[in-house]
Image 1: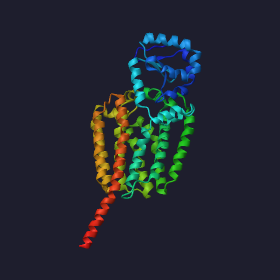
Image 2: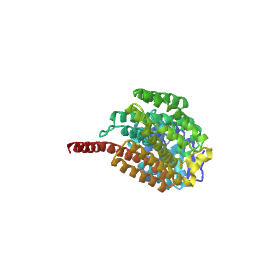
Image 3: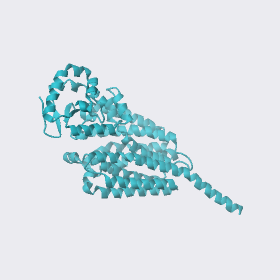
Image 4: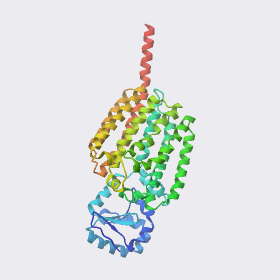
Length: 421
C-alpha cells in the first residue's frame, strides 16, 4: 500500500520495498548524516550506486521496483528518493538537487571513513558523530588554548599534551553524544534532523549504547589517570555536568549555559595538566570566555530545531531570545572577547595574541549579524565556522607566546646597557 502526502516530501511505504528495508546499515554506506540515497532519476546519476549496494534485492525485484517507481514519478512530478527510518521519502527535483549539492559540500574524510567501515561498526561511528567532527573541535579548542597559554615564554605548547587532549576530546565528545541520544531517544524520533540517529532509528539498542558508553568512559578515565593528581580530581568533577546536561532542555531556557559549563572544562584542565594546578587569574576569565562562546554558537545551532523543540515543549536560548538573538549574542560575544583579553593580560601576552583577538571579534560579529536564523543551512554553516575561530585564537596564543622571548631579551638588554653606563 502506498501513502502519498501532498507536501514537498512524500513518504511511501510499500511491500515492494520491504526487502530493501532489511539492510539499513548497508544503505548508509553511501550516506552522510545517516540518511542514505536509495535511488533516483538518471539525471542525478545515483541509480548505479543503488544497484551496487542492493544488488541482490534490486535484481530480485527489479521489474516491480521500476514499475512502482515510474508510477510514483508520474504522480509526483519526477524527483528521487531518500531512505531514512525504513521509509522511502520522495523529493521533488529541486529538493533533490539541493540535497545532492549539500552532500557534496559536506563531504569530508571522516565521512569517507564512516562509509568505508563495516556495516556493524557504522552505527557506532554515527552515534559519536564521527562524520561530523565539528563537535570534537569545539571541545578540543578550549583545551588547546589553555595548554598553549601555560607554555613557557618563547616555547611551543606541549605537543604530547595537545595530542592527549585531542584523543580525550574525541572520546568524551562521543560519550556526550551517546548520553544525549540515550536521554533524547523519544524526542529524536519526532525531530526531522535527528530521526536517523542510530538509537532513535533502532540501529543501536539502549543496552548496546550503555555498553559502548562504558567503553568510552573507560578510555577517557585512562587518559585522565595519566595526568597529575590535581588534574585527576579536577577532571572527575566534570562527570556530573556531562550526565545531567541533556536534561536541561526540559528544565530551563538556558541549556546552552550548562553546555558551556560542561564542554569547556578543558579550559581549566589544560592549564592544570601543564602547570600542576590552576592559576585562577588566567583560567577563570578564559573559562568565562569559552562559556560565552558556547552560548553564541549553540544558540545559532539551536535555531535549526526551534520549531520542533517548541512542538515538543523543549526549551533553549534560541527560543527564549527569538528575534532578539543578535542583540543577546552580541553581549555574549563581547564577554568572550573581554575574557580572552583579561587572560592575555594576566599571561603577559604580546601583539600577535591581540591581533588574533581582533580577528576573533570580527568573526563573531560576522556570525551574529549575518546569520539567517530562519535558514537551517545558514545556521549550520555559521555554527561550523567556529572551528576556524578556534584555530585563529590558538595560532594567536602560540605566536604571542613565542614572541615573549623577544620581549624578555629586550628587557635584559636594557638592564645590561644600564649596568654598562
